Length: 376
Image 1 (cartoon, rainbow, N blue to C red):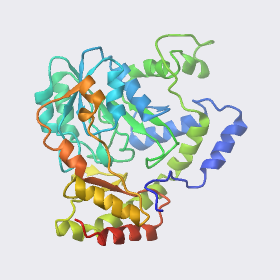
Image 2 (image 1 turned 90 degrees about the vertical axis):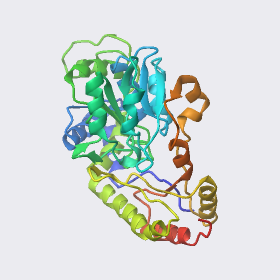
Image 3 (image 1 turned 30 degrees about the horizontal axis):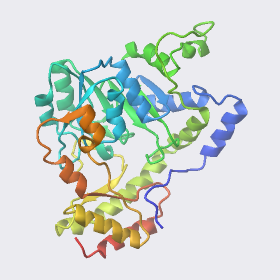
Image 4 (image 1 turned 90 degrees about the horizontal axis):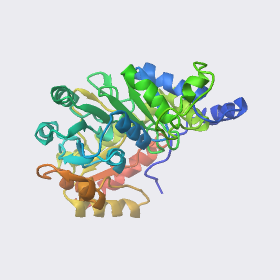
């Protein structure tokens, strides 16, 4: 069986994890946490990086730091993972779902302004498949209406928009290092931001509501309970594993891009024949080969193709069920305007295996098996 995903392993991870153990301190904010944060600061040209236990927790921190109040509204696409909405629902916000663009599967930036009300506080662009939303338009609307922008860049690590790293354009960016992502620590994430005014509150929030970070830096002689907080800090073992991957980022990305390009080039004839629709990457975007998907005619065709691949020992998957159609989506939010593309396009989409340790011979086998499918 060719798995849909396997977490990347490049070789240094175990060495660094053993080093962390030998140093005798496995709780967070040690050497490897600092190394990961510094790597991202330098790579993405952002002022502050706080490693977290998940992208979900990074989103929760961003929602808290944005001072979301009960009854206020947050605009986002419905085609996203539940954590995008959950982080704001926990603050008592109402979610306003906006339709997506069919070309990128991202929020349709042209529909956002009409969805803004006096209660709107935040816009949450989700960079699907590591392809950026139209951020100039979104940031312009945020400036015009005095809104915050929290980028859900869970899939966008090492991708960019007009040369700027995804996650560093809005007020906050939220990354994922889940085992399905390009770089992984098993479960993990990061909160990134530019503005110095958020740093102390963010550190307190991440450290159970204490000023423990200041204590470890020698800025205070004891740490105290300062405010609301939770345990959002990952262990050094997780950070050590991640640092082994970040150090090998070029190697990982080169392989993922090779897989992406092979799929794209060798399935192109099916797109020319009108059997599939391939991913679209706008000229101003640099993607990160986070996933390779294509779209078929309808949900019935997609399900048949998934079954065909499974029969031939290949695991492929569809993706999100739109949030607005779920019980919680109907309870905590509303869809603004008409659902022209969100449901229809989500039902057509199929994702192929994509991971660092995927053998190129298996990639060829996947393409050949798709070619042999007669049910388009």
